Length: 334
Image (cartoon, helix red, strand yellow):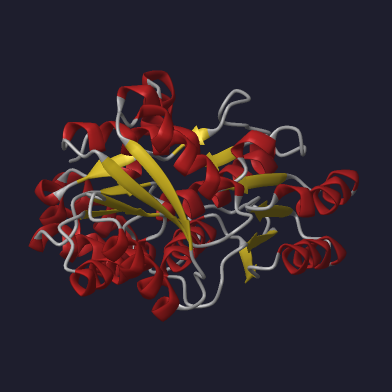
């Protein structure tokens, strides 16, 4: 499997691997997990009360990344006898309203993303006053503790960006474009910050309208046409990687297309060489662990992380790893 960078933290990775033995990628373990899943037949593995957990994310409609997060959360909810509620909105104020609606329902736990933290602070303060435990996931690791969350599950976005910069150096790249598809998303800015920190070459930021793939393609294509010195394009989400490949073809560019996040199309692109590498933050694991950690807190007052985020990435995925991951991406768990 692809290597974890040393700066992910050996101690955290070790603690995570011990607590998540069921996420081993070895063939024997997969077979064992499949056997257990078949025998469970979708039934809870515990007899704890049927608590209700709500997950509220900043996902827009049709984003495959969040389908994977939701899938992981739903799998853990079945195992933990949880009534799981999922909602999302890419507008920060609307997302905050969804959090408030969950509080009004008196849910037993909340999982939330903090892509735009300032808009979410009031809602999370209200959850804390209501005595509802909160876990943040995916975005907002820097704000999570200050906002009163038990822990954060995800990757450190700056560290992930640093991983990209290091990988670009290893590939001999000299000028990269970091494509930001959601203005105001602090995690996206942190990713590009990280790239700039470790990349020996030049980095330019390109802001695009992520709600329109034709606009994204046109913007990237125009950039590649006007600046032939660009030899790497980094997209910040898997759905945008294929669009960047099309833009490269339209511009007649030789730039390498690389991306954050993984899905079936990205795995196929890595395998056929149209993509150079991907940075996987394991969204299935983010959803699964968020539910599982809330259950552990409700059942046993356990808190994982020791005051630091529980890291699920970054993991650099290349062509060498694509074939092994293809089955997982097709079933929607990677």
